[in-house]
Image (cartoon, rainbow, N blue to C red):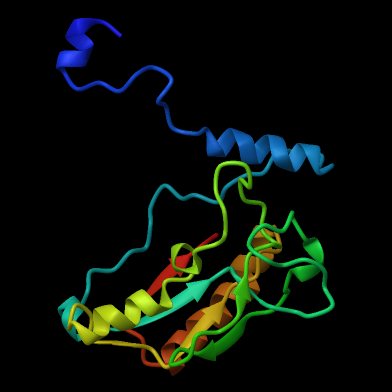
Amino acid sequence: MSQAEHDLGFAPEEDAPIPYMQRIRDYYLALGYATPYRWAHYAEVPFQPLKKPLGECRVALITTAAPYQPGKGDQGPAAPYNAAAKFYTVYSGDSSIDPDLRISHLAIDRVHTTAEDSNTWFPLRQLRRCAAAARIGEVAPRFHGAPTNRSHRKTLEQDCPELLTRCRADRADIAVLVAN
C-alpha cells in the first residue's frame, strides 16, 4: 500500500470482502445442479413506509432456521451441511420462549463463520430487548419459519402467501426476515 493510500485510511488490498455470491454459485454447481444459483431480485421493490413510529410497531421475525430434529444427524453449531435437517413447510413458534433452532441444513460458509452464536442468525432475544427498551412496540406472539427449498416459484406462490397470512393473523406491522 502506498503512503497516500494509507493516509486516506484505505484497507490493505488483501482486506477485501468475501465474494459470497460467486461462492454460492460455485457451491450449487459442486452440489450437482445444472446451473448456478440465481437470486430473485426485482427492479422495483414493494416496500411500504411505516404507518406509525417503530416504537409503536409490532414486529414479526421470519427465519430460515430449522427446528431441531432428533434423529436427523448432526445439527450442532459445527455440523457439516445436513440436508436431512431441512423443513419444507412454513412453521410458527412461540416468541415468548427460546426455541431450539439450528442452521445445519443451510449452505453457509463453514470455513469463515460458525453457528455458535444463535443471536447472529435468530435475533429473537434482541427483539425482546428492543421491545423492553421501547425501541419497537412489541414482538409479535409468534415467529415464523420460511423453508429454503431452492424454488423461487414455490417460495413466491406458496410460502410467502402463508407467511403473510400468519403475520397478518399476528397483527404484525412489520416483519424482519433473517435469511441464513
